[in-house]
Length: 246
Image (cartoon, rainbow, N blue to C red; front, side, top):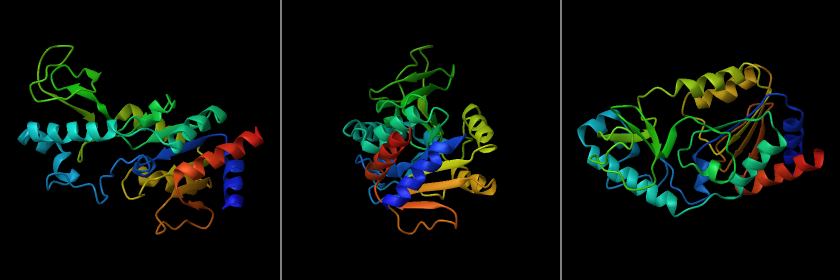
């Protein structure tokens, strides 16, 4: 493992257009339940049943109950060493494009201000009338007015199942994938597209894929670097190696 970490750090150090991608696994170490984990059930509902435009149209009160519960759960947790290491990684590698599938905002709390949130942020609301996006950490109901126009309802500023990912975010990611020579994938299942295709595209362009994951079922391709273990332990070790190379 030590040699693999050193190799990963050396590749990232020499990469000209690297990408960092994080998924639910990086925040699971903070105690946040994942969509598809054993704690993903809420009042007998699965996330796939609640995180849809149809569910919100049918019962916005129920959907907001779920999001308020999730916000409360997240507020009881805090960023872990992997989040802080990601922020340090960006400082050491200014060209690193940082992308997350998570909506918890922990990367920003840990000091990583330049991160593309593919699926939005649970602490933001979007007005269905004027489209204003606002940070809101309080409890929201279907009668909570928009702070900009005063109308209702507000919806979570997250990407629901069946919705298109934000164009302004994806355009930046796809542009980088055209030239990416390395990608560091941390704590993502590799089953949800389009993010699951990022590593495939980097491989296709003969770049290096580095993966950190606790799931032993994840098997690397021939030229990948697979680091089996907790991101909170491995990512700080990579940062330490990068500091020695700087």
